[in-house]
Every structure is written in structure tokens, then in C-alpha cells.
Amino acid sequence: MRNVKLVIPGELMTLNQYVNKQRTNRFVANGAKQKFTNIVRNEVLRNKKENPKFRIPFPSKIKIIWYRKNKRSDPDNIAFAKKFILDGIMKAGELDNDNWANVLGFEDHFRIDKNNPRTEVEFVESEKEGS
Image (cartoon, rainbow, N blue to C red; front, side, top):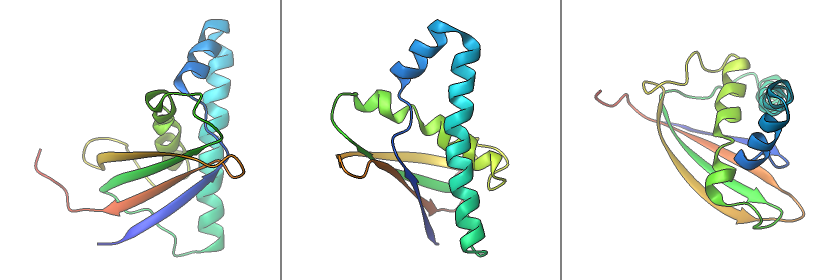
């Protein structure tokens, strides 16, 4: 069993921010989704370039520590960004499908770091569980 950590700099978009963009125009919302998905994709590709042995193990349990600048957003709105994380990993070619067979569960923690907001994602390799 091995663990792999991915650190995504900055804050990812919250659910409320996404909904507001969706109300403006669905193309604006899709553009924002693509932007944040690509941020994650690029971070995965950067890690792979710096360390050719970098591989995210699947199936995995996923532990996420969300470091935000402040407490203005509720945890459930922040955790919405899991969508961007998994889609970015798929776009980088590290995951073929973010289904139940590969994603065994989530553990979320929320912290404040006004000087260095980021999202730390730890993948804990697991055996496939029964269906």
C-alpha cells in the first residue's frame, strides 16, 4: 500500500461561485469548470515531469485538506471542487474513470492559511472493496 500527495496551489472555485456563473451563462460556467480542471491537470503533469515515477494509485481513498484564506465559504461549498480534482486527474491520464471502482471514499479537512491557500490531496492506495 502506498500514499501519494498532490498539492494544488491557490483556491479552487466553490459551489456558490459555480452556480453564480451558471446563472450568468452556461458557457461562462463551463469555461470556469475547464479553467479549474486544467489547473489540476497541469499540476499532475508538472509532478509527472519532475518525477517520472509519479503515479496516483487507484483504487484509492482520497484525503483532502482544503487550506483557504478565510472562513467565508461553508465546507460543503468548498468540497464541491472534488469534481475539478478528479476531472483534472482524468484529463492528465492518471485515471480512466472516477467511478466507484476507483474512488473508494473521501475524507475532508478544512484549515485556514491566508498566506498560502492550497488544496492537499492524498491518495491512499487500497484494495478494491466488494460491490
